[in-house]
Each structure stands twice: as structure tokens, then as C-alpha cells.
Amino acid sequence: SVSRAPDKYTMNDTTLPPSRKSNPRRRRGNGGAVRRGFGLHDWMNLLRRSTDLAQRRGAPIRRDISLEEVKSHDKPYDGWVVLRGKVYNIGPYLAYHPGGSEILERCLGKDATALFDKYHSWVNLDGLI
Image 1 (cartoon, rainbow, N blue to C red):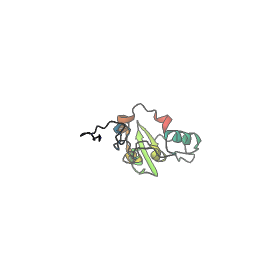
Image 2: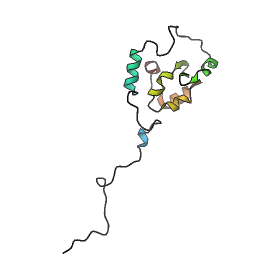
Image 3: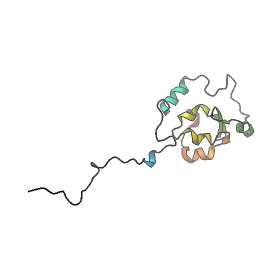
Image 4: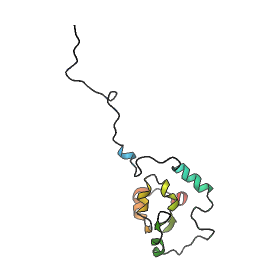
């Protein structure tokens, strides 16, 4: 007797090809992955080893920075933001941001507190940037 193929084939997850859809919970602005050498661990190592990451060149920390001055620092190579009343030079951090640098680049030269707190209210800024 000749065996005949069934009229309908059933597929299950062991026979289906892997899905090409990205997981929406893991989606990132930079294509979904952190580039090698630019993860949180790499950033923390850089913070520990750097002697002048904020590019102050020995100048003391200033407390009198106006929003007008912050607005003039709106480029990725010289990017400042205001977060919770403090001014941060986040230019060196842009490439390390897991959500992609584009998100932060839109905030350069501005007060980014509302956007930051929307997604990262639990983050200790002083220990990260």
C-alpha cells in the first residue's frame, strides 16, 4: 500500500522558523542591541578610570550656570542637559545610552528632567553620570 500525505499539515513551535519580530519589551532605539564596548559595565569602568570625563580641565564645579548657557551646549560633542536642577555634560555618555543616543540628542541644551523622570525616576544620577 502506498502511504498518502495527510490533507492538512500541522505545525508547532518546533517546526516553525523562529519569529523575526522583535520583542517590544527589549526594543531599543539603536536597533535592539548595545554595541560591544558600550554597555553599562563599560561606562562604569570609564567613569572609574577617567580623570576629566566632564571636560572641566581642572575648573571647580560651577553652581551659577544659567539655562541660556546650557542652551549653547546642544551638540553631541558638547552636550549639556539639566536634570533635577543640576547641569550635566552628557556628551561622553551618549554612545553608552542603551536606548540609543538619538533620544538624548533631542534633549541637549534643555531641561530634560520631565523626560528623564518619565522613564528613569529611580536612577541615581550622581552615581551614573
